[in-house]
Length: 197
Image (cartoon, rainbow, N blue to C red; front, side):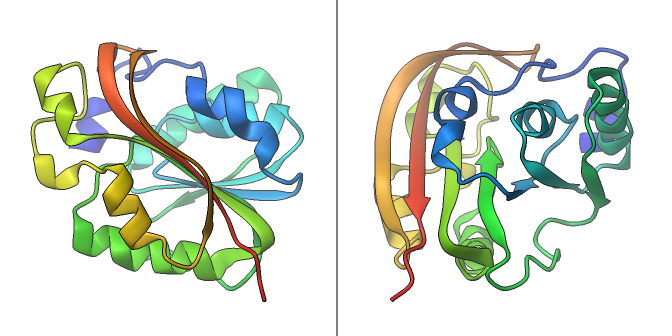
């Protein structure tokens, strides 16, 4: 599916970074950042422009090739990894930040991934996420129609038990990101920090 979606010359979700990421990226300590399901590169490029050392993982080789071209045009260096995000070795305590922007996953896969995210963050590291909530089905402006792939404040609280929540809101906002995310949307946003004992 994703190779097909990214096969157009146009960038499916645009070339500008996600608004929530742009607004809150400064909460991530400067250093190494991992972008999960990066797609065509817009968020990784933005973070690299802010001085982060970025690794971007995606399962679509087509998306990664477009991301590489975008990074080259913007004059930034990014480590791109073609891999199934759920099988990617996040490692232990090595990331200053990990981001997940509109990455649709069912709950069992999310729980597995978020455990790896928690282990992978260093002390003081930040997990920043934006996802669609089930109310997004009322808008139909992106995110598909599978409620199982959507998230909420309660699901995030349950699935991130070992991180300290610094920001957690559900809200309706205008999301204009290419042709597949356009219009009013219902989203959940979280910034969670790892604070080691």
